[in-house]
Length: 305
Image (cartoon, rainbow, N blue to C red):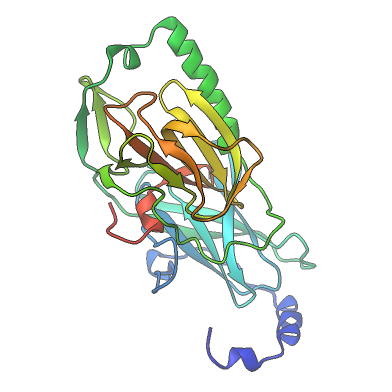
């Protein structure tokens, strides 16, 4: 924010903005997408599995934004203040390259005749590497019983992933995360995985190699919204950080929290393990925005994947 702004009467600024009718923006090219400066998190990467930062302009009330997924309008996280609002959009790994858009709505409390408008972005191509893995045959060619279990768990996880909360506390001051456990990245986000010679879905998280029992800490403050022992993911905990930002921790040997617990940034709440479909002990860490798994490397210090 420019140095002169703190000297303005902020109440007067709010009042003046409330009278401004923002123009409809038919298209915003890739050049208009906000590029991150130092200290802006997550870093923008408008590729499949990445994050777009889309400028929504000024408004007296926080705008609402949605993105179409199938036949459902999914809320998009909006950050900023009356001077500049920004939509932080997760882009699916399966997203086609080319143009996409979100729909921006007036703030819930705005007294305005402002109409919904589209803000467009462009998804650039990215080629991810391939990884060959050998695992227990029963975790690739599922028995009828295991298939039924997987489908039950998949439906349950879909409900967890649809979580959208309005935190009672103020919005997180930053989405800059810490790596949840020390160790080497043993498998990066987006890898095209081949299990026992059979292609499966791309890797939707970051794997961090660490010994069984290594503590895992929360990268941001959050609330536990799910724990369980799942067929593929093993011991699993989901944290909700508000406004559609969720994180997932899999293959755990120990889960030291229950649904409804809150954890602070840096607080240990589970331990690395080798449960579920694994080739050795490690943490699978996932980050989700607007029900879309995105690259965790965009939220932490260090190289992107």
